[in-house]
Length: 424
Image (cartoon, rainbow, N blue to C red; front, side, top):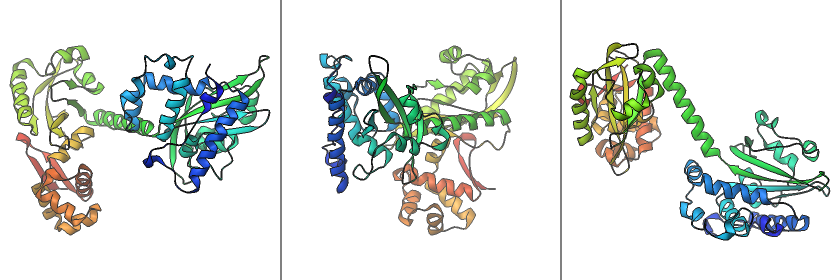
């Protein structure tokens, strides 16, 4: 077990971009000193805090940091894995450096409570996560629980419960900060027991997983929309990368009766034998030039049936115009009312050019200023969008296209990959 002082040391970040101005700076320094003194006096078992972040860094650092969209590089966490000090049982290096690193990024914090003296301590990182001023806020477990979302508060043990040795493992909760903003936190705590089993205190770690949870909810919502569309019209979406590797949805396997192993060998296996090579050639030719295209193949349907589908495919590009993915939508021929979803929607918006926007404005009898006002964009942005659409930010393009859709404009992919503009 590392020294208690090392396990609890928390200092404010030294980078200029992470400094806290004004009175908060003094409060954070005081909180860091108090954290150090608290654990030093109490000789608290702080392995929980060190081990929690050590395991995060070793097992899920890359995935976690991608979800959180934090600019922490992989090598920061792993370049010293061979260092003997990185052993879980000897964390003098990791407790100091990992906690400093993570807390300076605003995604982690720690807290402790010494029961006999009723002493509470929060690290500077926890104050940041909760949106509280360390100079004016007196930390307490009741305050922490009081910030938890009412729907999640029942899963938190009460202060009296912790003193009675109520176990509280790892869980994800939501908190409401004083400014009204919500954050999703992964929390974990561990009791410190006397030799006779009496609870002496508790220490906890907190990790801000708001971005990860937001992404998870967005993915779940997209899956529900996709499923509802399939149940209603048998419309499904899928994707493929520039190397022609396809990713099919569960709905695609349900429709065709094929397995992932079968489609991995040949993504066109669902196309009837006599048409398969023709449509494969059409697809390859369009991929080579990076353009929108449509196909109308007859597919094998589960239950030994055949049915003609129409498939719309659009390229998805990065900021430099390089194709990074392809979005596809398949539906029975003649189906109407199938809105583009996910990647297909993004790709379709990227394929909309300045002449499409001008045509849409003409149908509405709008000027550039009208579109700019309705979409919340500047007039110069709309001008650039119509004159040089490839140089326009994706967010601005999305706002303009979404605005036009809400007032009745429809963008449709026709045979040959032509995008048509119409009005409902």
